[in-house]
Amino acid sequence: MAKAKSLASTITAHSSNPFEEMIRRFDVAAKILNLEADIYDVMKYPAKNIEVNLPIMMDNGLIKVFNGYRVIHSTALGPSKGGIRYSMDVNEDEVKALAAWMTWKCAIADIPYGGAKGGIKCDPSKMSVGEIERLTRAYTKAMSDIFGVDKDIPAPDMNTGPREMAWIVDEFSNLKGGFTPGIVTGKPLHLGGSLGRVEATGRGVNTSAICAMNKMKLNPKKSTLAVQGFGNVGSISARFLVEQGLKLVAISDYTGAYYNPKGIDLAKALTYRNSNKGNLEGFKGGSKLTNDDLLCLKVDVLAPCALENQITKDNAANVQAKLIVEGANGPTTSAADDILNKKGVIVVPDILANGGGVTVSYFEWVQNRTGYYYSEEEINKRANNWMTKAFENVWSVAQKHKTSLRIAAYVYAMNKVATAIKSRGSY
Ligand code: NAD
Image (cartoon, rainbow, N blue to C red):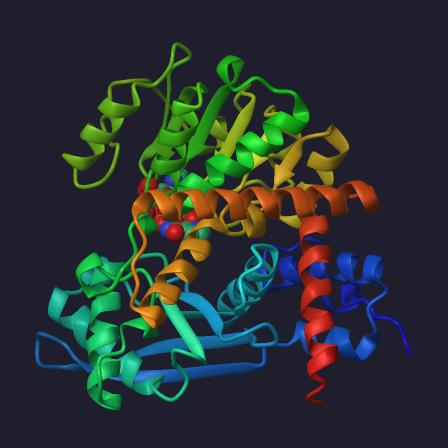
């Protein structure tokens, strides 16, 4: 059978379109796997790509139309899983990339799910709660034949959370009849959410960082840490890593970065953020830096936990960290990867490092289906074991193929998905 062709000719060199970024890594892994050209095509294209335009009655009495997407990348390993993002940056290529990353992430974590992602182009900070609720319900209605406990299971992502998930449960249950909490994960606890879900991603970032530090013989108690982003993933990753003994010297959010070589007082930073509309503007526990300065600080560990495309060809050469652990999705471009690899910087990629969230989402779904609920201790222990196993699997592939952890993660995931596609044989 013909071998995988390269998409390189159809992609401008090292642009930061997230779908193209995904394909560049996919192409390298496909070559290592000697992936057949037809299986390459099946895995490259999303299985389903739904676009909707949702008319919503705004509070001022005028109708506004919102553009939304749900992309199902793969269902080869099980029902598709992936969050819903509300942002003005939402576009088809971003959702396609995020959906594919979910496929790889679930395969790496050994979760029997495929990958999907959804998004609505909107700015919820400029909408009333009623408008956000009407939009969420309209999106659920439009996707009611796509979503399903055994078909496609959404979750929160940027600017969505337990509140939106509760509306989706309610709307879907009303449309289909019967109470269906397993239709989404990341729900409020009282509607069947899981203990440990809020901390799960940060906890997993910590586990994968400690696994990598062990391999690199970096002593956490003698290591420094900088964290970009101080939301769910950033602040919780920082909390667990500080508990392991790392000295947190810099934090940041959209208002800028804050640096203290003697150590940021995390408890004070959290209290400050919580009393300051959720941001760090005016925080006095460190001197002010730009976000780019933070990424290039001389620290042992850097955890980008905010946005895509933060470490790029323009700043990668100046990155001084020995280890980068990607809490965010897509924070490093492929051009930056090449530079970091040459410098010997170890990068624990997003599809491995932030898989703790979807792992506990899977536990939530299992609990909803069985009606039996685990203790927080049980959840955390299981999630920790799963993350450690995922890290070891990817590390072994990297050793075997003498490649970066990012490419190894793609190789591990793509091999698993390709095997499922071939054995199911529905083509
Ligand atoms: P969040 O909204 O809770 O936090 C995002 C943080 O990033 C905020 O502190 C915000 O101020 C900061 N930020 C925004 N722009 C910034 C900039 N230019 N420079 C520095 N900081 C900036 O979001 P989150 O849930 O923590 O998600 C962060 C990332 O992690 C996203 O890429 C998301 O897709 C990914 N992720 C989240 C989860 C999860 O369970 N929450 C799971 C997997 C991956």
